[in-house]
Image (tube, rainbow, N blue to C red):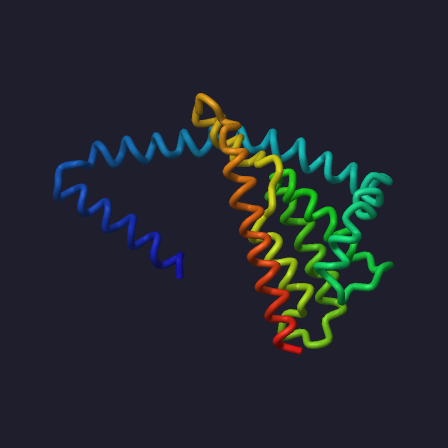
Length: 192
């Protein structure tokens, strides 16, 4: 659908700029946007590379097991269908840690691996299991202590204080996560 809408928006905007005499403004805007996109990509590349590397080291070392053990009570509460020795525990905990550190881009492959692991155990392949719904909720709420991506964006846009977003992010992500977990748990209870 977006493959249809975006070209329509672009064509209509360009035609309108021709009739309103703003072709120079739209051309300047296009080149400025391209420049900004490249600068933002370079900024993200360094941040993402660093944190993906750190998460890979944690995944391959005993650190991931220690972090999984710390998060086990939380994971046990959120994912009661998963057995204690299931490899999904570690994948889910790494995904949660990446989200907590504000590393949405590093959390994505970890979340996909966790979802694949949960799907293998899913008895009805055409519908989501309760654990899969909870994982989607946690990724969507994205509880963050350090909103790394947002800070990187604010830094790239020359914000005077890029870290001033931290406290509002804490409030919004905690409230979103609590409300979401409560709602999912309620629907799971009603569905039984």
